[in-house]
Length: 134
Image (cartoon, rainbow, N blue to C red; front, side, top):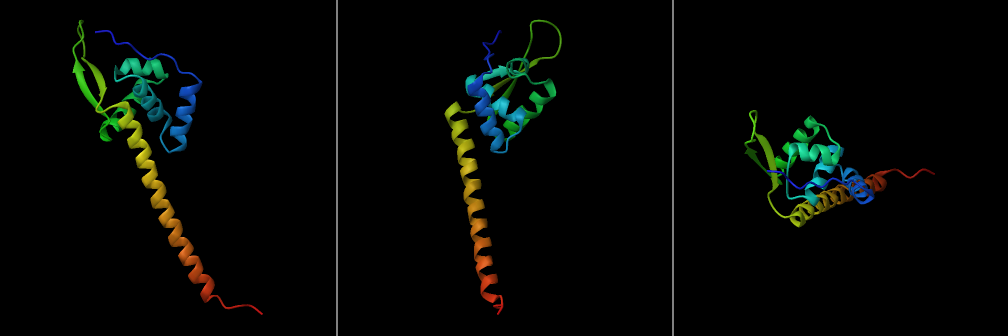
């Protein structure tokens, strides 16, 4: 079964990769996300070719996406002898994937804002207890 694969990596994809990397995702994971933003399923080799990644990089990033419950993995037998190929499919829609990433980062921002508030409160306490110098 031949899969239609997303094979162009242009300026828009580069901007998306940069945004994902700025949010703390690795280059490999960002590129794998981009592949699945444009394809609902794909074999490991398709991801390698389309996103200019090596096999171990694809393996690691798809494993991370499976741990995040974004991907399902199926074994597909090939026509010839040899090992079956892994077919990865999105668990939900592309919109759900993007919404999850955005929501996850918004939660992290709120947690960091709370920590900054704790530091500000402590700073105010420290300033109140400092002896004034004359």
